[in-house]
Image 1 (spheres, one colour):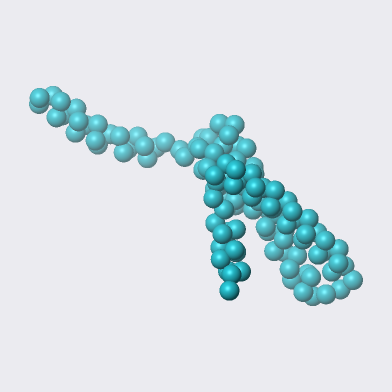
Image 2 (cartoon, one colour; image 1 turned 120 degrees about the horizontal axis):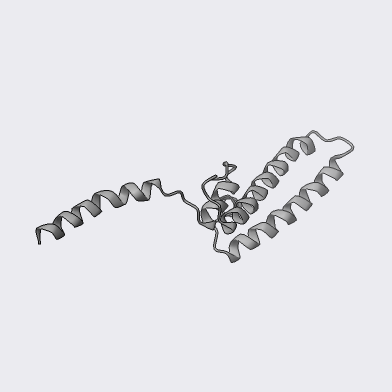
Length: 120
């Protein structure tokens, strides 16, 4: 009984330390890192992590591009129509990525926040 108690105590102490050293490498972790504009976790070599990271990163980059167009359109000018068309194409691309994320049950907090803000 004494040995079992020591084994349990040792396990209780060691397991959190082991878990803390384990990198978060799920596809959801990759998605979140990418869509938040963070660096990829070099310790994560799974294909699913990499794919999710690239999709999230693409979403982040598209949102950055779209946001950069707003002040240019607001300034007016001859190319405002071209910029609006580019924004519409970016919106289509964003929706395609969000569709994949929805199917895979990856959250998109920015999308839900924008929907909540649009409601009266």
